[in-house]
Length: 160
Image (tube, rainbow, N blue to C red; front, side, top):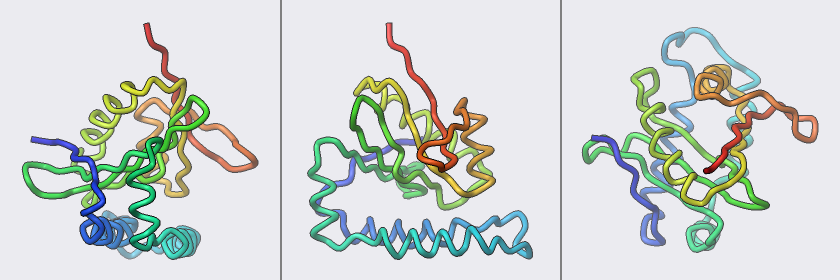
């Protein structure tokens, strides 16, 4: 059974473990011999810049416009996602599963959609430099858009 649990201020150690697993999950396990130098450089720089010290982590967890979740299958943590709401939209800040190509990302997105819809943003946006992730987001109904000269993905929501 899949579920998401909200990250609390007491979860810093688990958050750091999840962040480490994210870095290890980036590389395409279906084609281990293939190297993605741009992705590696972008990933390393983004990871190094985004390592949150405890104070920043607590600040982000307490931010009413930010939601962070551990994603679990049964009781095993298999992913993490972070949402940031502002200006009537939702940015997916982080969205990753540790073991790809097993349908976990699709299940995580289904759960994330329920949480996103509760806040009723007009659209969801994200940036992803990874080809596999780009294909995933297109399958989830996102369209390619350019925001400030950067290729991003957007999905619009309508509510009745």
